[in-house]
Structure formats: structure tokens, C-alpha cells
Length: 277
Figure (cartoon, one colour):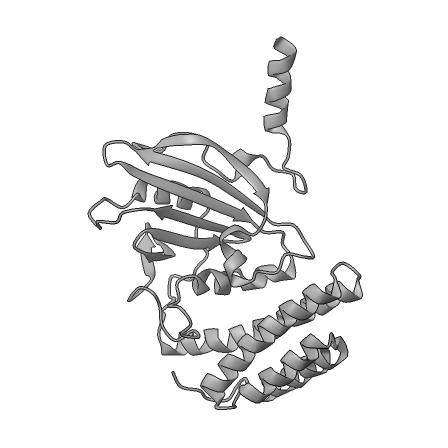
């Protein structure tokens, strides 16, 4: 029995596969004030909340760590996810991608799901809309969610403050989500979409991804790029999308890559052009 207990302790102290940390390096493995930890946290491979932003992970390994807390008196459950990113070149987009999750549907960067999704907590600037908090801390993204369908429950600020102490936000305290910021975000998203395509083609060149996956992912990002270009630069997208669809259906990667180069050259010339929301 003693050997079994010892083995279990050693397993808990082992680094998560791929990087030398333990779960407790990323999660608060204890009660937080009146919030009781519901179950021990865990870490699995994946980019977590940023998956929906098409965060690129295929040339490195990210980890998503999850834990839940519960405040009995308020009957309020809180879910925390801390994603650890691998100090790859994908990390330069973390702040950009974190902001994306607060945007309103398919408005292409021009509006947010909340009137002003920024909040100051103890001098830390974080993204916030009711029920959801998010911020970045170097190569770590912290996401905290709670459910309140009535809008009457207290915010779980004890939990937020505890994680801010562990992972201080690096979002600039001077950040203002004004039109100038939105315009810069839009141009950066167009740049990121083309960057993603290059990343996928590099995976193909290294024989670390299948042709079909690379062409599908590239087609997706190029179509999003064309949507932005049409909306903000006035260049119709329908014909270009049809051409790309033809290349995709014929598995013509050479022509898809040529289109990517064409769009990159165009953006290099026009990224500094004035656009309006």
C-alpha cells in the first residue's frame, strides 16, 4: 500500500509531457476565499480557448489546464482555464487572438459583443464581458467563466484577483478599444491570415501535414482574408473565391500558393492605406 501511495505522489509531481512544470504551476490547487475547488485541476495538450481563433499549434505543443471552483452561498460555479503556449512565433498573436473572442459575430473586427470589453482589476487591464474574463501574461492565456442567467449573482472577483496575482496581465494599461485600435486589429488579422497559410505550407514542405489538410486550412484563411479586403478595401471577393474553390477541388496546391503570394504582395503595398469602419 505504501508503494502505491508513493507512486501516486510521484505521478502528481511529474512534469506534464513536453514541458517541465506541474499542474500547480498553472492552477491554484486550493480553495480561494469562499470558493471551494470542485476537483483537482488537469492539463492536456491543446490551445484551449484560442482554438476558435485558429491559433496555430502544429509546429509546437500548447497545453490547456482546467479547474473549477464553487461558491455555495451564491450557488455560483467558476471555470478557469490557463493555457501555456510554447514560446513559438505563434505567441506573437496571443493578444490579438484573445481579443477576437470578444468580437461580435461576423462583424469582421468592427464591433464587440460588449459595449466596452475592458476592465481594470487592481491595476491590471483584462478583457471582460458578463460571465467571461480573459487576459494574457507573457506566453500564458487565462480564461475565467461563470454562469449567471439572471444577471444578479456577484462577480467571482476573488478568483480573478487570485489568478491575476499568479499571472499579472501584460495588456497595456493605456489600451483603448477605439476606432484606431479596431482598424489596426483588422489589418493585423489580414496579415495573420496570410501568415497562417505560410505556416501550413511549411508543414507540408516538412512533410508534417497532409496535402488535403493544408489546402483546406489555407483555403479557409484566404477566404477570410478576401472578406476583410472586400469590406475594407472595396475589392470584390466572389471571383477570387471561385478561383480558389476550383484550385481546392482539383487539389492544385501550386496555384493556391501562387494566390497566397499574390495576396501577400498586395497587402505589403496596401496595408498602410487608410480604411474606415
